[in-house]
Image (cartoon, rainbow, N blue to C red):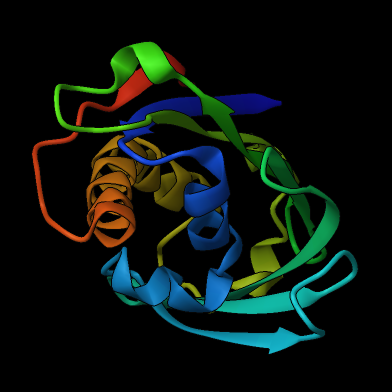
Length: 173
């Protein structure tokens, strides 16, 4: 299994941060590759989200299920289709990171474990002469750039303004 573990700080308490990481339907605002999100359920444990992704000549719908919620600390999920993947959004208070003028700060963690070799090659309509291994080699280096974009936009939503955001990479394939 490969693992991506990233974090950043938002200048709000966990109780104010958590609703943003929990709101999957807002995620298309944070990334250029997520087109739309459809939800089945009420957002609680057991809810299923269809995440419509598009990159290059590829379109794919990832189906994600919320497996556990411990608000305002943790939301766990796993993919239901085509690739073995699971992860967690975690929010921890980090008051020592609050700058002057901010009353609180929280560290937001995105933790995902996945097996790129478990992907179902039939799940993507690949162009002729393009292999799944080629797609994986092209996508993995772009994950960090995409994560930075997502984090910057997420924090802007949480704080109500844009600012430079530091992304800490704890683990990356």
